[in-house]
Length: 162
Image 1 (tube, helix red, strand yellow):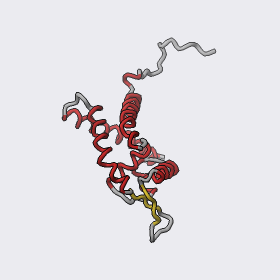
Image 2 (image 1 turned 180 degrees about the vertical axis):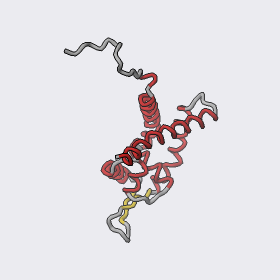
Image 3 (image 1 turned 90 degrees about the vertical axis):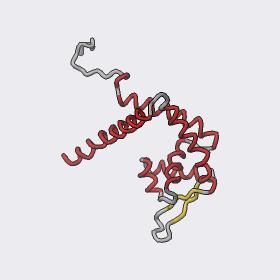
Image 4 (image 1 turned 30 degrees about the horizontal axis):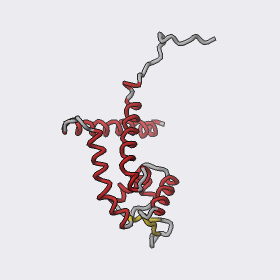
């Protein structure tokens, strides 16, 4: 019969207040909610937002390229693009050379949203980093980049070790 855990065991403890993963998740959720409240009145969902951001930087990417850049599975990308197409934000066009490839192009309506929505996103970043000095903000971004790189490394190392 198992004995109840009285806290005196050897199990490691990880209070939520000191859990980097938990704190990142909660910060991400808060920033997403805050952004969503600002962009939805413009007919843009969070799902669409990421695709618009990438297309504003480089229009005409294939659906596969969009999936890779945003980090979504292709079915998710197809669904988001279909919704954006229905909203008149993008059009899809077959590649003239390779008919299997579908390129996604912003419509004038999709392109025009950049001027409306990017200032809202800047406001979200400013709100999220309120009270940060410019140096703190730069360090914070550096630390987040380090977290991403640190967590990406074991995956490639694990593959090499197998």
